Length: 233
Image 1: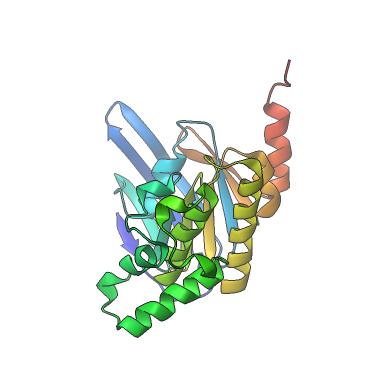
Image 2: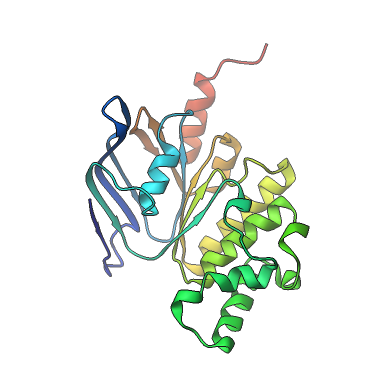
């Protein structure tokens, strides 16, 4: 893989060129996959189970290495898992966000400032001292996002972040991310099965059998997918 950084502000934030990945010779997941996510936009990635969505996200995050192809990322990436309990490791909110800053060798005052800025960005300043176990599912997801913001990640990757949330909290989270993208010049790629979430993004990709087969206007893709689903009995 050729994974590189670029400072060209006109370049897409994420560019995937002919990327293929397989777990074995018999288990191909991605095949000549291509996509581009524009800078400062909120895009979604759709597809049936097994289409390669989560694998592609892990390739973008650097958690996996493709067998072939090229991935170009313009900035630091923050990854938000489907289950936030898999990434929140410290006992309190502030401690967990600060934990992600350890490698940056910041002063105590700088860490405090980063933590408070990140909590303010996700509207959770009042939870600074709250134990992680006392948070709701939606609050945990927002703390995971705050951890990425504290590290000054400009690209956010979300792997079905609303899958474990109730409908009201699902809407709150997608609106929160939409606002963060707008207000902080971030770029986001969000994996989902929920077609109603397409109402809040700038564009979408449809993945089938490891390839992007359609992309662009989210409402057009929503109507296309609704038309292919069988009506309830």
